Length: 70
Image 1 (cartoon, rainbow, N blue to C red):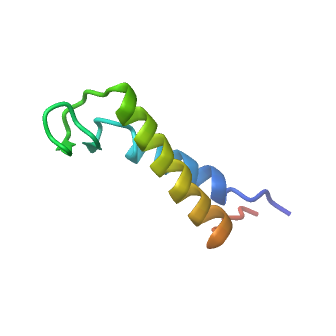
Image 2: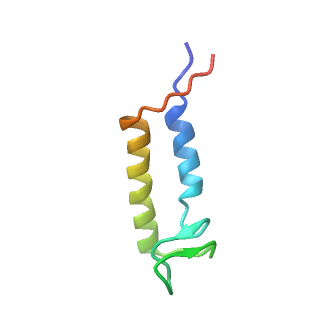
Image 3: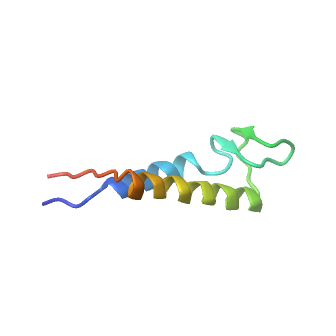
């Protein structure tokens, strides 16, 4: 029986998509939200980490995404 790769895949994809400044930054330096500015700040890292944890928890525990390779 193969291992459950669902949480690993979801974690990696969310980490890439929710990196502050890559797609968006919330809160930004001049505005509330900036898109693709490739900059970050301490509060932005904290907020993106909280969003990451919430979405990861919902997808892996509440919904229960499972990926098995045989």
